[in-house]
Length: 491
Ligand SMILES: [Zn+2]
Ligand SMILES: [Zn+2]
Ligand SMILES: [Zn+2]
Image 1 (cartoon, rainbow, N blue to C red):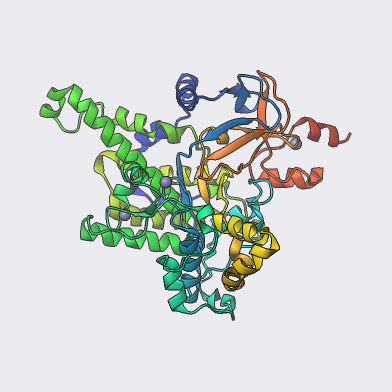
Image 2 (image 1 turned 180 degrees about the vertical axis):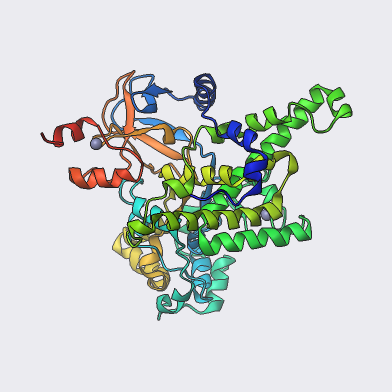
């Protein structure tokens, strides 16, 4: 591949190498022990046969919760924003069932509807959640799904008058039994962008502190910066929304760095007096970067699977195109939020590794929709009550059509779950229980797991035959040697 088009790659080569060096075993241990301690889990992360893995530190019963994993960074797919209004920090559904339904129908009527990628989405929340969307992920990384032109075909004949939708959204119109499905109220971003909404003041503040203060396009940010940010977002929305996740990683690293520096300077006041650009600044940046350094493996353009319609002979140029796309996105982001002290973070090499981290760790964010639960509840009412309720709810269900059950979907990076190795006969799975209403990953034991045993999940549909499983796992960069594969491998 020809040399990098990014000048920072050359200028900061040493620092980039330090950022991209694999973390030492001690620092890995310290990092994961700390997360596990804080979240009180009966597991351990340690190096095993195939790199790091998650091991039971206590005995687990069948169906017992093994862990809930708080995401490091996550975002809802842009195409999903029409369907579901969720908290931008914890991904809980917000507002009310009425607001969810009214808003979606209203936005669809405006022609904002985005065609769903495939049936997988609507199926996703009633089957076992949810690593199976690999084919979709690969596709969406290569090109975008934003099929803007598709709205006319999806417009429903049984459209609801706008006035009715408005009263649904402002809850002048209350649907029967919706109080059984109450949701937290909507808090909008204090920065005034109108883009992000939250379930609470707490989530709004946490998001602002951790990610959003650098990425908010509201009127509190500087106008030229705002313009640049809007350009970056538009590019990401048009090409690949994985760039928005990458921007969140960079933004959160800068914000962590600033907090570390502040407390460092408070401790060593004289440093600040001598030189704002203190000698240990880079070590603070390394510290701020630490959570990310635990996750990445390869550059995006090197690890992205070659789409079927790309000829093997065109592989090099395909990978170059992907790199150029990332570079374009990075340049736009740089114009918006560049910070000199954190310059190495804005190198193409680092950007490629951040995006690659999402590519290789197939970690989907899924939260089941209360709208689906609501209509199921209505359908299950005793017939005497059901007839009366349906008189009001039926038109909305008809207008929503098959889309009524669309869940919140996005991408996320879960620090512990991403350490779990694959097995085609896993002893655990990601599964959202009734009470799991936010975006955290939930891992449940499929059978009893003894203390000391490795906890494994399946990255793919493990029901598939041997050859198909192996072919799918190539995208994750390994050949499966699980007991089942060894047995089925044949002579
Ligand atoms: Zn929240
Ligand atoms: Zn904002
Ligand atoms: Zn296997």
